[in-house]
Length: 206
Picture 1 (cartoon, rainbow, N blue to C red):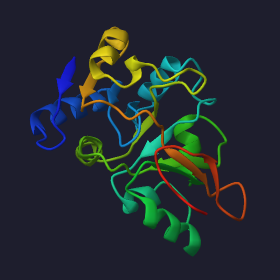
Picture 2: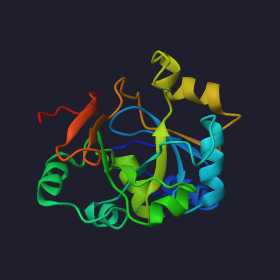
Picture 3: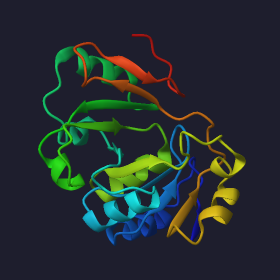
């Protein structure tokens, strides 16, 4: 299915339909404040496995990020944030950033792995915010675009995305032409000081 949603006048009926699909274990493509993403309900293990398969990997090998509604939801999936880290993410979220944080015990169970970190986003995109709010928990997501491929038109144009993925994805949401830069990734887990793993749409000075 192809849903056209105006981010300035969101059709609640279409959001409800998309969330219904997510809760039923379906995978969707949706706009963010960076590139288009593909995702599923974080709490649906079968859907997580399907999303990993779509990306060509096993669930315990993939690196999905989670898109949260707000800081309360973010903190329910991470361990306690120290003051500098909290201040940093508070300054930049919502926005086109992915912060790698220390995950709490729920994350390894969800992803069948021993991972101790998780990439976390709160996007500044009205459609994504509406989806996550209606779902009631985070969306597990990854960029539609693979980093080792050039960013071609079919990754930014919703109609091209539909033509490419209509037989693989249950719902594709047209929220307008997508950005050509992925989110900026900041690692707040691996070292004592935060550092930028990848510069993207978000501008930051550390």
